[in-house]
Image (cartoon, rainbow over the protein chains, first blue to last red):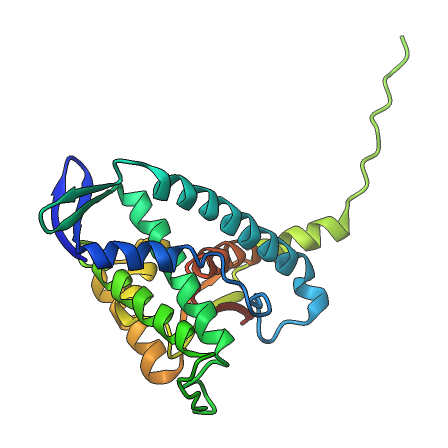
Length: 153
Length: 99
């Protein structure tokens, strides 16, 4: 996938036919939640931040539900991907680029956590096998599409 | 004509203390390193959430990458919560810590 132009306030990307298929495939994983919710503080006592933590958990859950709804809509729009001789032309409004980035990174982060956070502080190595390969694949796909989306920003 | 007695309003000290605490800039918003978020992505998120230019956003991104964390801003409880929410919406490892 490659950024090709900014036209009438929309970012235009060109995808190959396989790329479009893989983008849709990886997006269908969302929301992929396999880990504990994020903490709002490392040092504050639970009493201090209980309300803040509850609000954060609610906000992230609402955001995931809203993103899932927007994603379903986008993937089902007949004109979102317009076929051409090189594959497909994908047009995105600036806010759509933002939430697509959020979604892809959420999938990438959750895959990494499901894998056991390889490469984190303990330098743990997680081998590629039948169980882990789909998560490694999704992580790399997300990175590829994130990089393409970031190019014009 | 009877004088109207003014109601006695007692100070709500607990509420005041809570409000004062929530307005004082005593919380640090910290972003922590992880090996999964892309460097360009982190830079972009800092630009969007804080409205920083690319140079400042890259400076903090590199601090996260090289030093393991970066203090992004010092805020009141409410504002710190807001920024942590925004950063976590983008799946960054961000927390707020008492200064």
